[in-house]
Amino acid sequence: MNEVGKLLIKHPITIKETLGQLDEAGSGVLLLTDAEGRFQRTITDGDIRRLLLAGVSLDDTLGKLPTSESVVLSEGFTRQSALELMNQHSINHLPVLNNAGHVVRLLDRKEVDEQILLSSPHIGEHEREFVEEAFRTNWIAPLGPNVDAFERELAEYCGVKHAAAVSSGTAAIHLALVLLGVGRGDRVFCSALTFAASANPIVYQGAEPVFIDSEPDSWNMSPSALEDAFRDAKATGRMPRAVIVVNLYGQSADFDPIVEICDRYGVPIVEDAAESLGALYKGRKSGTFGKLGVFSFNGNKIITTSGGGMLVSDDEEMIARARFLATQAREPAIHYEHTVIGYNYRMSNILAGVGRGQLRVLDDRVDARRKVFERYQAGLARHSVYQWMPEPSWSRSNRWLTTATLDLPRLGMGVHDLIRKLAAERIEARPVWKPMQLQPVFAQCEYFPHEGESVSQRLFETGICLPSGSSMSEVHQERVIEMLDKLVA
Ligand SMILES: *Cc1c(COP(=O)(O)O)cnc(C)c1O
Image (cartoon, rainbow, N blue to C red; front, side, top):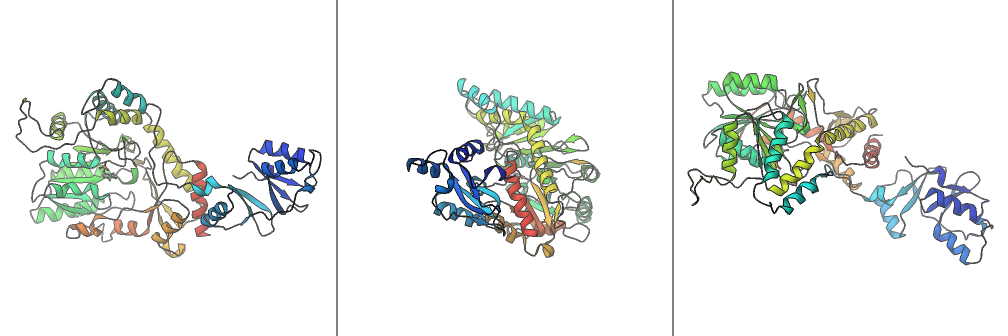
């Protein structure tokens, strides 16, 4: 990764030769070594300039150079110590020496200074055109051609008949529950291992969440825990009004058994595909397996409109009703007639323009995130401490986030320790979602574990999410891999 070789120079060498090599290396710095290859000092453009100004000629050798103590690092340095040294000496490069005094790499400030984020927005080439079009036509808000087109294009991409663009994924889940008639006192089953936004809208409706555990193969809703919950609900006469099934970290839940169970009990599914746009289940696009499907375009998702969401369904009436409810439930009358409570949940025409551009690069983003995952897996393959999130044969995940569980006893530290160590290297990592049954706000809710084991809890206690953005450079990924490698070694 570090081509130190072309930076090394040895006595005797002339000023002219040194300038030539500086020019070729393009780094602004060379590394002078003794005959045994042990590092002596760095040579910069400035050093040569000062020699020339002092009257040294181009054909003289570097022997005329005053000796100087160069700042160096030894292997195993920390990012912070490197950065402090660089700041202290106002330099951007530091040679890293091994025990024998040989340079193993030249550390660039950029490598240690830039923060590596979990999942950054990644804008393509076309977003600006659609947004500019909206400005040019003064079609800023609220609705307009970009919204209509974004809905059409996303529906087409997913192979679903209808879509309503809204202000967030959470709003889409809320509307889905309203459309399914979820109200006060109702129960709604929901995946336990998820972000709180999957479950919060249940409470907005005055209903009661019941959490269903994960199964180990996909980390998503356990069909057997779901069956247990339905059996209990039937026996006690407390059937749910809906089931919210989440596709975690870009991977679909195992829908064949889940749909079979829900159909048998006659309860509709809301598919929370906020994280899984572009993923597949048995070749079919994620988000199309429930009565209603939900996507999010929040800033950290696989594509983004800075903030936004989409509700999709084959049911034309439901989507029309969603659009109506999302625009304050205004009846068609000039005096603003209202017969039901509405919401201000629509997406603006500007943001839909961003969404249209993002949709065009969605498949590239999926490929890029899958590649990020593959590099982690390959780069750390020799450490069985890292157990990567499995991908069952029926799944093609979009690998929104690369996640792994850790063999903590062998790692010799906890998930939070590991995250702190990565943070000290300016690498953002997170634990796996804290399951809803463990959240103080949902502590009173019922919970059905998977075959006697709380899989979601185990995944939370041992799981980690790594930086996975589609725009993440290979250098940055190497930095993460190196750190994870070093922490195990
Ligand atoms: C992001 C997310 C949501 C919420 O989407 P927003 O657009 O942020 O409101 C819901 N469910 C899951 C699983 C998510 O990851």
